[in-house]
Image 1 (tube, rainbow, N blue to C red):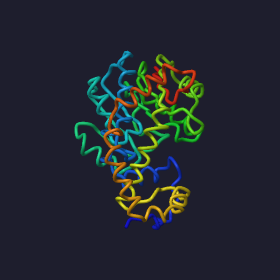
Image 2 (cartoon, helix red, strand yellow; image 1 turned 180 degrees about the vertical axis):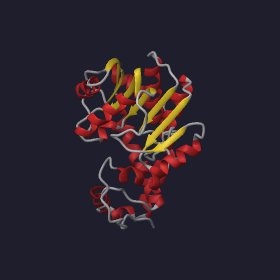
Image 3 (tube, rainbow, N blue to C red; image 1 turned 60 degrees about the horizontal axis):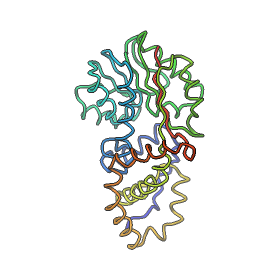
Image 4 (tube, rainbow, N blue to C red; image 1 turned 30 degrees about the vertical axis):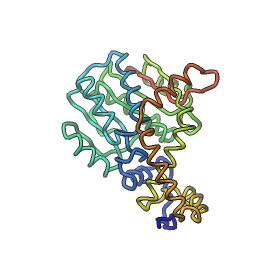
Length: 286
């Protein structure tokens, strides 16, 4: 029976290159609850749809696109096809994922590299996407990354910046002030996903736990492994594993649905006095 006694001896820090690589190699990108399942996870589908809508409401044009922190390339490809970019480049520091992404989207170019520095020619790109990636950097590296994005953009080019809002990320004011250091902000949009994350996000974590136990993998962070081991007596039981299988069977279709986060955002937006914004998207022009 699966258990979580194994210890890989590592404590992978949140947001580190090793942490992201472990998430990809251990969970893959097919299961709806996996961290990198951008193609079939309903929340990720909805999030990408919202980013496309923000771009569509703006005057986006040009030939060259760069997606910084492109991950599986799903958003990169969607933006490239929607706006008919000709030269498309995705950058990410998880080499194993970049290799797979490049094989999935052979018509585009995907390269391995890490922020804050960008290995590209100055004044080359018409649009740079930085979606939920810059908050992983320290304050000094955030500034360098913003300068690098400004450098590789053509005059008049745009950056699409999006971030989770919260203590470990940006506040709305911090996000706006950050982007304003180098760009003129022309569009701002906020979404309200707290209700979704506090309900279906919990179910997603349960299904992700089932995935990990099924594959015999453990969390990358030592603190999470220690907490999980406290319940090894329960995890070892057939009853608990059968319970997880039932939850997975019934909840996976819900996790795949993009209508649920869409409704959650609409509902929370109608009652903003009760719900805070959880995500911000900005378009800045050079």
